Every structure is written in C-alpha cells, then in structure tokens.
Length: 276
Image 1 (cartoon, rainbow, N blue to C red):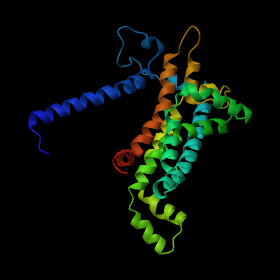
Image 2: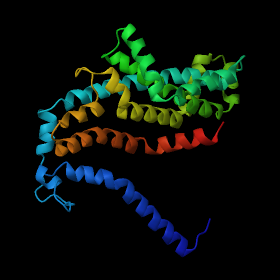
Image 3: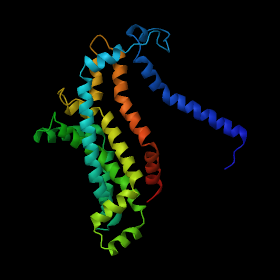
Image 4: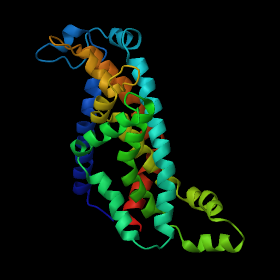
C-alpha cells in the first residue's frame, strides 16, 4: 500500500521512539554494570560511566555463586523445554489429525492448566514433589516447568499441524509410510517455525521463572539465576553493580536466542495465530 510522505515520516518516528523505549532498560543495565558503586548513587545520574570497570563482572563470576546458578538454569531450562516439546509434538499431532470422543473437552482441559493462577497450584505441587522426594532437585523443577509450559505449547503446535495439508500425509500412507514416519519425515520438517516458536517460548518462560524456583529450590545446589540475583541484597545494602552485572549474564543468552531464531520465531507465532 502506497503511503504519503508525512505518514511515512510519522510511522518512522514512532517506530524509532518505540525501539528506544524498549531498549532503554537494557542499555541502562549494561552501562550500570560497568560503573563503580559510587557512580550508581549520583544524583542526577550519570548516563555514561566516568571510569568504566569490569570489577562487577569479576565479583559476579569469581566471587559469587552465579556461575553455579547459571549452569542450574541451563540444565533445568533445557530439560523442561525438551520434555515439553516432545510431549507437545505427540499431543498436538493427535489433536490435529485424529477425531475421537471428547476431543473438544480434552483440548479445553489442556488449556485450563495455563489459566490457573500460580498461587493456586504452588501448594499442591509442593506436596506432590515432597511426596516424590523431588524438592530441591533438578527433576522437580524440570517437571514443574514442563507443566506450566506444556498447555500453550500444545495449542500452538496444534494450530500449526492443522495448517499442513492432509493430502501430503495421505500420499505417504499410500506409499507405505507409518504414522511415526509421517510425523518425523513430513510433518515436523514442515513445522520448523512452529517448533522454534514453542522452543523459544518454553525456554524463555523457564529461564525467567521466579516463584516456583523460590519455593521448590531452597538449596544452593539447584537454585536458578532469578533466585541468585537476590543474594546481592542484604538487610542493609544492595550491591547494584553486582545485580546489574548478574542481570547481564542472565539476559545475554536470551537475547542471543532471540537473535538466532528471530525469523523462524516470528513466522511460527504468526502462523499459529492465523492458521487452523
């Protein structure tokens, strides 16, 4: 659609302002992470550090538990994302390709799990994990995170699988392919954007999750990064330089993930929203 010059200028200015507003918190965090502690308390604040320093990063990497928490977050997020993706693939394919009694009910029932408030399921989950001896374990958090990401993952993939022509699978069946063969050789390769969208959604959700980790991971051996950030605050003081440096360590992997999968992620979200 052809736009007039004033409209194009207005859209460009609005887009630039939106980008600046969105990037400002990250830019401020990055600049604060290389400032000395006195500079963080100056009024009015200094936008650029007078003497950039990496002392905050040295403290975070060598004099704190952040490296251990980083590995914990990687293990738990990767494990829960992989488990949720595997289960979502089979559940979504079943909803998309098979008709069975009670199908609408089961689809709605799956989504109910996404609508429940966090406070309503913390106690039942804690009792269940304690009974299974999974409190303060990797598997406990992996299962909990899988539970909170699986419902939406199933709905996203179901919409994407429905958009793939059934005729392709019917032709493969005529050629002697099995259902699993069709799923892994035809359906999944054609659903790459949808799979990436689910993968990024599940990973980011589990990487940034705070409440469940706070309740189910009280031991330092399984604490995750969001919980680890609180260790830079004491009763009388907060090491804001350390908080900002640790926040950068936590944010960079997510930013790289988005940059790497940007096109597929956006394509998967839009396809899942418009097809079905």
